[in-house]
Length: 577
Image (cartoon, rainbow, N blue to C red; front, side):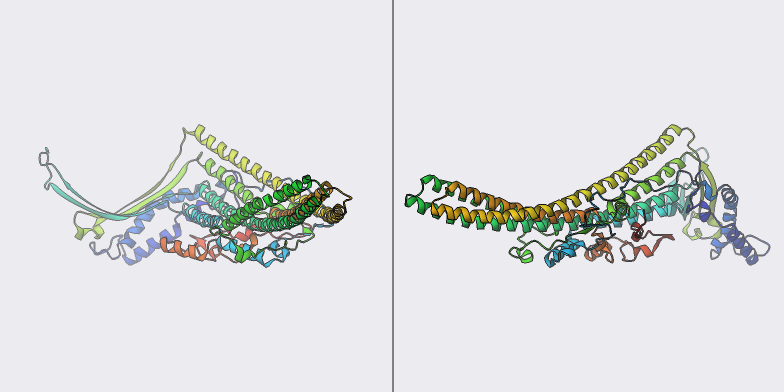
């Protein structure tokens, strides 16, 4: 049997024998020579006098359990953090635009120096409904931790009061003196299954890990949210610029159409030139509605991220703007940093830790379950006699229960939990691989789009010059309209491609920040749930201190609560997780 260093053995909850004998000694001093009060009908000291004999009856089985139990009785495997394959460095680390310096990228969007983007991200953080749902799941996990801690204490603690009136048949062979009986009773029952094999301690550990996993899930939603808001914002700016270029192209096409009409009227060209110019103009005009559709749909998607009904967003976005300034390099750190920094990786690791504890919980069912029980109270036929010493009744004892003929089912329960743990380990390892691949994809996209944008800038300038020359030659009659048409098409395509490449460069940089796990730090110093929601929940249900900002500083029945800061250990230069 594996011993857990932080196991909560049942001895911490067993009756203290020294306390029992101290109570007994105090009673003897109060009533010398007898164990019974002088006034048998006086209830004032009844609990004290009768508690002694009651607890003394429990002392023998409790002592037996104390002898049998020890911290080394915790069964099941102890969790060891799984290993995950990571490369020593990024494939693009040799590029000077990729820095190996570690960075948390806590507020990476500020690097774009765009106040509109800053405002959008903060509005999304305050209002996004998916993020609020993730925050509520954190509160749910807090409550579930409280349930797990409570299972380590007496599982049954019931105060009861009953009244029964019974009428007996008068046609019995030996009828009682009175046919009618009243029975009044009140008392307290308690049953305590001892944590002999550590299943309750492991359940608390699992709830701890689950709570931290839920916090990491919240952080992962926040990382995705900040990235999605920024990506939609960049897409909106790209559609706006493409629509602006399309309108400029339309004005240019109208000028060319007017030129061809004049040339045709003067007999310099055929009607074919006019028809081709009109066709090209109509194609450019048809592109604008398509861009407007995509622009409106992207704005609507951004509204949902902001937690707002779809509206124009013009008051926030303005009437069009260039792309925000894009940093020319990214501090990617080393791949091993992902194991400590990415929330979804940390969530998967904590999920595996919780599942490991469930193996021990299932294995504990293979062994006897020890428990102690006690009950005490008053019972009488008349209410006036209910609280008299002579109406006191009590019982106590202990025992065990052992499912000796269910080993096939119980052992398979253990195997099921072990299989689930192995799946969680593989899931953790797979998430690490996916995280590394996402970073690699974003880095190569960021670097290559920078190069592509450089080439497209040259192509755009060359296309402008080509159009100028072709129009001049067309006016002079030394070139046909086909050359003008080709030059116009080449310029428009180069301009559209340049805008899209510039957008892709920024989008890939945003994807890199997301893949590196930046942005969750926005929640630091804030609650997981907005104040208005916490107030609504507090008015509806008694949440105790689980809604407070200093939740982790409190405890559940003496059990310390996990601190979310445990999720992300500091990354030191030159160290490997």
